[in-house]
Image 1 (cartoon, rainbow, N blue to C red):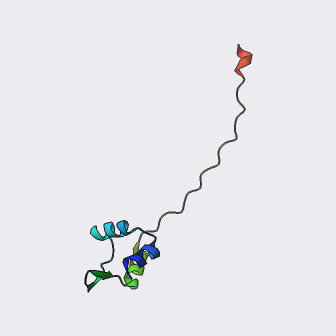
Image 2: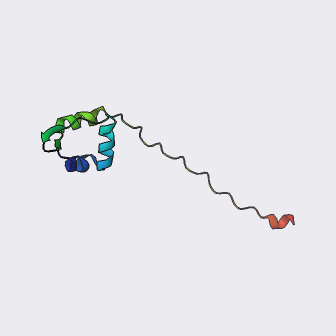
Image 3: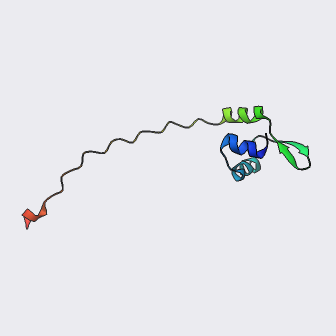
Amino acid sequence: MTTDDLVRHLRMSRVTIWRKRAAGAFPKPCALGGGQLRWKRRDIDEWIDRLPVSDPVCPIPPRPPAQRPRDFGRLL
């Protein structure tokens, strides 16, 4: 897979992929020569499988019913 393939497949920017590579948090590419890099799809899929699963989004509890505004005019 090329970098462009990864951007589309992972829905990540090139910069994010580069940063993850620099941090050692991304599969290593294969160098083809001439500065060309390619990733094995299998390595990418295994990396995805090892990513932690995030918790499902917690539903927001409903708001209590709105209270009627106070009428301070009677107090004056």
